[in-house]
Length: 329
Ligand SMILES: [Zn+2]
Image (cartoon, rainbow, N blue to C red; front, side):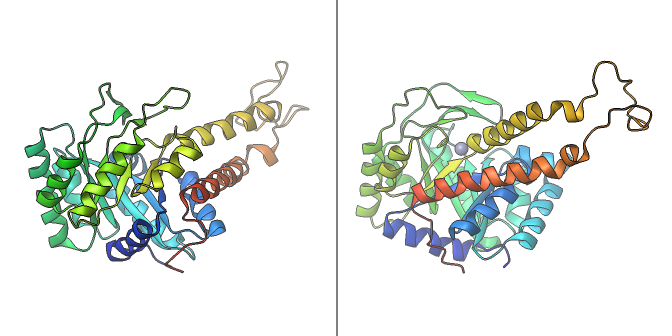
């Protein structure tokens, strides 16, 4: 199956918004994470929302974001299996003209998130509306916008003061911009928030959703910085019109944790003992000791990472309620 576009994604979110369930939108920062997520989504028969930010496009495109988006789009188009796979470009900064033009013109993204939430209301509206017009002119991709300020660390930028989203402003914002999804600030944080007491205002998400629906606006809410949320908190948010929960940090940690345990366990099969010459050139041909290919083949760790990421995604899709509900099979 190919990568799906905005029209199909619109139907997927509409069903979720009406049905009171949601999707974990999973950031890809490394190919093994993407492979694991694809496997997890197929195992749980959920449609899959994958996300990339500028820094990942740079990483995968060797510094060139257009090449990075080609790599991601082409790879996912080739690898997407029996469920719907959608690509969202996450946190496109409003001032980033280069990235705006690249993602708007590209066929791969089913949705694009513009971030002008650090601007005053009117500027946020103007920037978002401009992107909505550009995207509508170019194709069928959806636009996610953000109102309010989410604290935490996003691509190295740290925001300390959260500003909660105001329900009345949310209605005016959606009416004036025509955005398809609205990211709200209700107390989550970008980056690692686990272990801290989040002042999560679930009632505020409810108020925003109620206000939007009362105004006749069918706009799913998005929660960024969901890595630190408990299953109970996610379940409660899904009752309030939240249909997309962004998870990035959790997968990065699971990758690192899997790798750390693996290499600690197998260190003596890779690192030569102190009394053996460090003869990498001849792969220790003269020594009694030899490194173990069954361990140092990078695919051995890669498979473990994929399995772990798949397991985590199956758990998260169960909590979000999308498990068993693929509409694109
Ligand atoms: Zn975010």
